[in-house]
Amino acid sequence: MEEGYTMRSALLLLVLGLSVQVGWGDPLPSESPMKLIFIHHSTGENWLADDNGGLGLALRENNYFTSDTNYGWGPDAIGDLTDIGHWWLWFRGPDSARYIEALYDEGGQHSYYSRLAEDPGGENSIVLFKSCFPNSALKGGLNDPIPPIEENPLRGEDCWSPHHTLANAKGIYSDLLEYFITRPDKLFIVITAPPLSDPTYSANARELNRWLVEDWLDGYDGSNVFVFDFFNVLTSNGGSPAVNDLGMEEGNHHRWWDGSIQHQVAVPCDTLAYPSGDDHPSQAGNLKATGELLPLLNLAYGRWMDARRSWTGLGGRTQERPAMIRDGDGEVHVFAIGLDRALWDYYMGEWHSLGGVLTSPPWPIWNESCIHVFSRGENGGLWDCVIWVQAGGGGALDGSWHGLGGYLTGGVTGEADSLDPNLIRLAARDGGGGLWMMVVESTDLSGEWQPLGGVGSSAPFLMGDAIGRVHILVQGMDGGLWDCVIDGLGGVDWISPGGRITSGVRALEGPDGSLDIFARGEDGHLWIYWMDAVLAGSWHDGGGYIFPAEDGYSATPEVARDGRVFLQGGDCHLWEGLVPGWEEWRYLGGQMTTDPCALGREVSIAGAGGDLWLYAAPD
Image 1 (cartoon, one colour):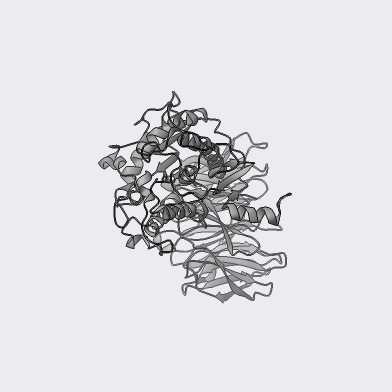
Image 2 (tube, helix red, strand yellow; image 1 turned 90 degrees about the horizontal axis):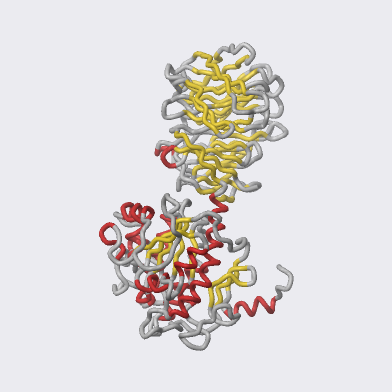
């Protein structure tokens, strides 16, 4: 606990209904203009206006280029529809793709407020959306169960519907997260509906907005959603509707206060404290809301950008899993098969074409003097691109191609010999799925294919262990894990650890000849076979859910040398398994169309559309 935090102060927080969040950094605006759009009606129009709530001016001063929607806006005049049930139409309904495309592209104003003079270009990155005060008339019971979205009658309905209930509203918001998690490149700010003067349903309105702030995002793994409790802010004033309590210690607030986010309910009021002749908040209430929103918006923006900064777009496009390696200078190379089927190397900030016509993912190996990149050619044979990197970097590359024969099904894997790095061992399947190994002399690029027996239904994975054996791990035709063990004298022995796997295999060696072997199980979970030095072991459920192989992906998890496990989750996003349990998972975002490739904490993927991305995972 922080210094000065006592049981008495904890009790006081409970009495006041106060929620404090820490660890969000400082509420600093963006250094460069960010495009923001606000979905609203008349209450939002008043809030934005320079002569009322001044929100437009405040957004301008904090470097947000603001656009908005209003009545009559957009395809099918979707701007007319901003009640809670309507958000399903915007983000999840059958026409949502058209609405969202128009929303992200909108750069105009549909009400009067000041904004930055120049549009910085591109799509809107931040979306604020708010329902109006009639939405606070939520019917139903406080403890009614939340229905599944397919049974929720509030979908697409307005706030006058008999289905406008507390439980149904929670169900609508819960379903929105299914869209928001797919767009880590956008920041969504939910503005709660303002309160009514009529107290009939005010307890339900209070409960919905408490739930949104405190419970809604529990278990949500993204950093791109934030809730501002406009309702709570407008339920206390400074003595009259014309005087607000902005900056006062007492009162109801949602703000940055004393170095943390404070959601305080200190006044027992669930109705509008700022009436203006009707339920549109008065200028004093809107000014309070502006003063409390902006620091929180900056905090949410900073947290979201911190998560996004881990991703680096590399440009280029591929349909195959990329690969990575470090050269002798420690520089990272990202290899990808381009849409032209040539081998490309992202090195020193630029893509370099190395030619070739390739039909499997690249597999790079460093042997102390150059990089060998192995892949299946258009003739079905194995090819080796030998890349000489200019000492000291500088971006200069020189590559030459060498055919190694054979006829392969799928890709190849391998590694340099731990004792003689000029020897490279490779494993592949032939046209019938039979397993073969080749030992390549990197000095003269010669080698012969050696049959290993056995038939695999996934690409094999080759690695040596700490006591000199070579393991070639593969999914067998029976769906089980098989290990072809080659001893130091060249003897071959097949063993079956059993299990039922549905992907390719990766492994991590232990210091004593043991292996941790990773694959996707029939249940979609990551499964780990802990094999000891005498080749005995047991299976362990690592949890998670890996994108299914039957949908066109190999579904193979990735294991970095430092023990990190990465995989494409069932949501098509990147996830990291946390050591030491292999049973906790951390969401890393992204939108993946291939399996990941990891090099320590750096991970490369092909994103949506095949664009190449590099992610630096947290330590």
